Amino acid sequence: MPPRIPDEKRAAIVADLQAGKTRNQIARDHDVSPSTVSKVANEEQHAFDRTQVIHATRAKQADNRARRARLSADLLSDAERLRKQLWEPTTIGAFGGREGDWHTAEVEEPPFADKRAILSSVQTAVRAHTELEKVDAAGSADGAKSMLGNLFATVKQAWEAESAGGPPAEPQAGRVGSDE
Image (cartoon, rainbow, N blue to C red):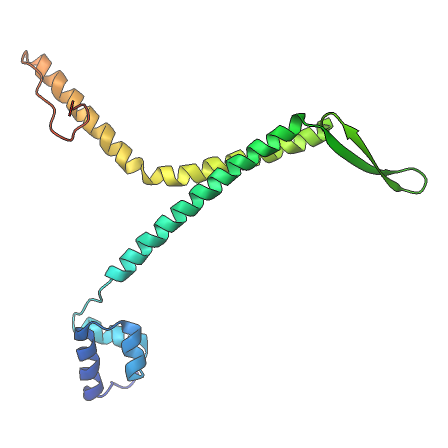
């Protein structure tokens, strides 16, 4: 079992905790490990302020969404550019002849094997684009579920009112189906 830290050092750590310093800064200031600071904090029932971490995490998530959106758009553009190559004139080449020289020829469109490779690349780019779209759509799925839930509740309310013989109730403000 490691030796207990001196009472003076512990009191100074507690004072820094109450002053709002970070765990790692307190550890550096008092030449103790971060886990020692965490242990003292737990004993004092002190919770570190995680607001900055929460904001930084949200900012990073937003940055990543933006990066995925750019990449997704680029992949779709790549797929379009690749697909156009299926029907454009191209230069093909191969080694041949006695000397094994490189020969080229202009053709109206790529050979079938090259078209198959192009289509495979198009498919890969479109699939990657679609997967990126799904990642960000999953985040908005909760909103869609909520909207559908509200729509269901409104329709159910109208159906129940009609079944009871009364006029349907007006939808609540902010619910799906309101005319506002």
